[in-house]
Image 1 (spheres, rainbow, N blue to C red):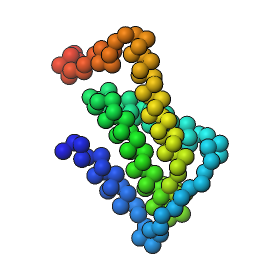
Image 2 (image 1 turned 180 degrees about the vertical axis):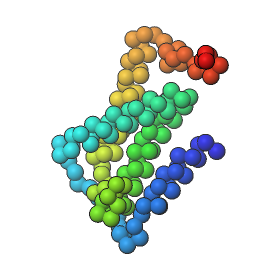
Image 3 (image 1 turned 60 degrees about the horizontal axis):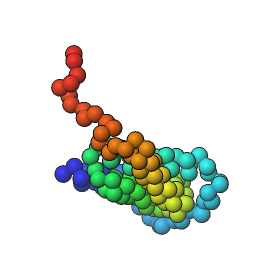
Length: 138
């Protein structure tokens, strides 16, 4: 049931804010250097999500696909929801540049993890202690 929770939430959010009259697919032609802060946010966000999913027990390739899939789902939402009708959740359109930066963030996370594993000669699971609620003292 947990594996279906994220797609269900994304579908609910997307369909809740879809304006019926503006249901047209839009492309965004933003270049890389036009919005560097947005690109940096995509890069760091997708790298963080991939690392977070892996730290929660997903296999590395599942974590990478989940992080990239969330970025792709958000861009699909951007393609349908215009910012003129829905100011908070809307966007200019589907951006191929954002997808490329999301992919770069996932690859950056993978490169950092491989480098750390080789540098310290230990597996990811050895770097973090397991969290057990019984270990806390009140």
